Image (cartoon, protein in one colour):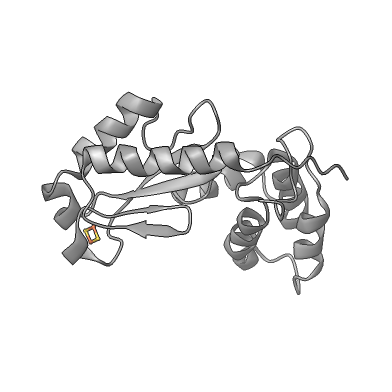
Length: 175
Ligand code: FES
């Protein structure tokens, strides 16, 4: 959305990262993970130029910081699609065919968990439980929760987001 401070990975506005770092009381490593979360919230992912600022600030190496990031599946190092699909792979959803839904999404959009489609519309993630097992299989797409889905329904729902996206006028905001 328009609140995203980055347009592309090449044009990173580092001001949000600088503000986050300026508001920290000190550079102790205990602040590293909360800071990564704040940076991710600001950009929707963790841009490498921002990570370089964190490396310098916390005095950590590239290997260390990316080691931490790799430990947390919700932390993304590439810009996600406009909509993040969180497909529940918890037990209740799995026994009701969540993996078949995942296969169908892969068939249609060529994305596996952790991947983004070529149009940068959808990023697929899996979740362990979305807290509404009675409505299994569950998925959250963008801000919306969808329950008792099946492969066909999932594809129909994604098609609606695609149509909505196509109907949304593109506003180029530079600077
Ligand atoms: S296992 Fe999917 S909502 Fe709980």
